[in-house]
Length: 360
Image 1 (cartoon, one colour):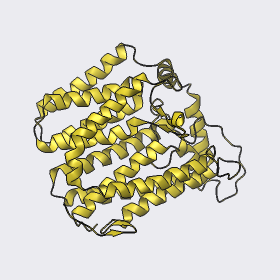
Image 2 (image 1 turned 135 degrees about the vertical axis):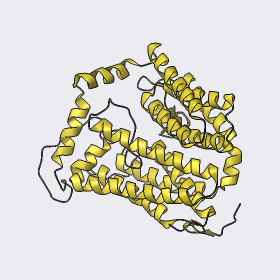
Image 3 (image 1 turned 45 degrees about the horizontal axis):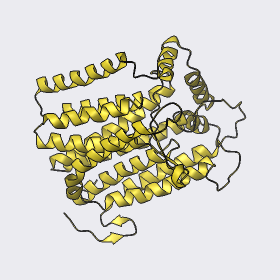
Image 4 (image 1 turned 60 degrees about the vertical axis):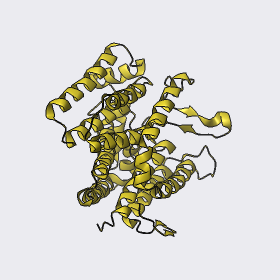
């Protein structure tokens, strides 16, 4: 463990690029949401106010995560995984919200927020997979734990997050030097379990409706989303003062936030945002290549896959290439749990950077 002096920007050696990237994505989100509100009011009911507060708390989460050494984190992984499974299990005994059990309602203790544990369990699952893959000993009980984690998210029900984690898990297994036969067998088991659950009618009526609407081409949300994106043109309406008819898109501040962003900033704005993310991935990939510790390689690779696949699924959803999934766009969509979990990811990346004295 390397001791670092504490500065106003975190531990000595903090990667300013990672910090500024987190702050830039947050500010972009604020400008995007600003166009969807009628007035600026510093109240908890105001979505812009909430997003700013979430982002500032996320910044604190980033710094807090950065202070935790990788060695200490490694020793805590098993405990964190058990805690994650327990919290997900506890959701089964909560009151359904909008027909699903995905959130803990903290209003009962005086806090006007909802916590979505699956946002944090995604990171813990990546940590757990990085540990077992770096140890090169795949105990049956560990793989069983991964399946239980996926199952508890699936039966909430949350099909989108389940598919996301199946993809991340598959990629991380194929990155390892595990024998191909064992990898294929494990992946087939995961997908077989998934489709068995489909046959056992764990899907809610709204999920079945989403899938049937997609294949019939009748999904209203995706049609409106494409219309909203096209209305932005090349440069958007934010700075050009273009007068166009506003397009209604359901849940446009959360799942369909990119359609609102594209309407405001146009094709070039969308290209710029995605380019910033691609640049971020390339810089983190350089950290992966330079670190000599197997666990850190698997961890950062898993986190990049998690972020990248999440962005791809969100874009494919709003463009109508796949059914609705409910997967948010990192640091752009409205929501505290998503912002906090992404802040943890940025903090973990920064910590690996610090401990390896990497120059990128």
